[in-house]
Image (cartoon, rainbow over all chains, first blue to last red; front, side, top):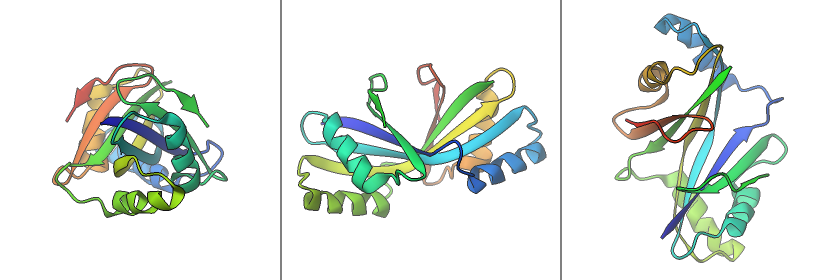
Amino acid sequence: MARVVVDVMLKPEILDPQGQAVANALPRLGVTDVSSVRIGRRIEIEFAGEADLERAREIADKLLANPVIEDFTIHSVNGVPAEVA
Amino acid sequence: MARVVVDVMLKPEILDPQGQAVANALPRLGVTDVSSVRIGRRIEIEFAGEADLERAREIADKLLANPVIEDFTIHSVNGVPAEVA
């Protein structure tokens, strides 16, 4: 069993209303030193055998991310980021 | 500017229909060696000054995660995981 994590975030130039809503709520909690909040998805893929980063990249590209508005990063767990797409 | 990342995932005992749907779609892509897919959220919090993990934990606890069904992990970027809640 090996785990690969895919982090999908909106591209920096795309507005993130959900993150904005959280950022706007922070002063009510007394938090004033946060300049921005962005919300994306974290997908954990468990492989039955070896972690296959190439395969994970293909899955992310076809099923998990919308390349028009999102970027994704893939890394195996307990490892350093392996790839940015 | 310092970035803190909060990863929010459903607790292992909670069903994840969204991840299941992705897992069920994989054989159609020719992928047969994935045993499970879980989908959660990744939140990037930018602090204007120093990264404040305690503050981030408070934000995660009050605004970002539902402690009944979700677990979260906090880490500053370029660092190792700092805390599991």
